[in-house]
Amino acid sequence: MLQNKVFLEILKTRNVSKTYVSWLNDYDTVKYTDQKNFTHTIKSTIDYLKNNQKKNNQIMYAIYVKDQKKKIHVGNIKLGPINLNHNYSEMSYFIGDKNFLNKGIATEAISKIIKIAKSKYKLSKLIAGTYSNNIASQKVLLKNKFKKEADFRSQLVFEKERVDHYWYGLVLKSYE
Image (cartoon, rainbow, N blue to C red; front, side, top):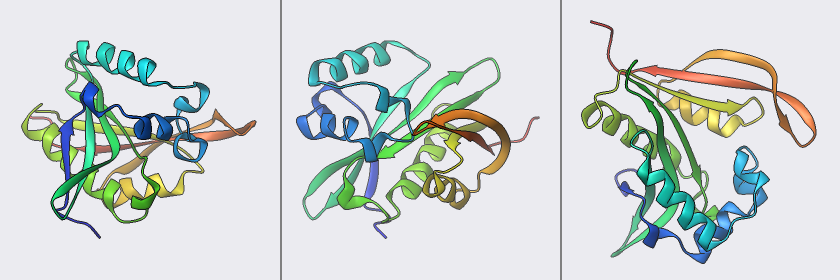
């Protein structure tokens, strides 16, 4: 476990590299996301990030691991869209650098984004969707005290088969 070596920074266009784009084009990395439906380039990724930064209701963070004296960009986590009327946000994430899979990094990144959602954005709830066959993502959410709230039967397509879409939620503060 790399606890306390994981930190988040707002994702900038300077973070877009050949390595980052290769994650987005790697089927195993994005198979549980809609990103698998696109071919990514440095230009298209920078354009997406610039457009995303203009939206006040979405904030993308780079997930870093501090290794000795350098920081390594290993994945991303996003809050958004943020619904200010109801004070909640969706959350999505991925670990792109396969050397850092199964090391607790996604669990730690979610723990940190929960703190940011509460303190910086004053959100009351976070939600995250996952494919029913994405067991790793479900475990990460449960480790962060998310509860499974919905099962949308046969809502998603995974490798030409229909699968359920699970939604998890975490109440950050009670309704007052």
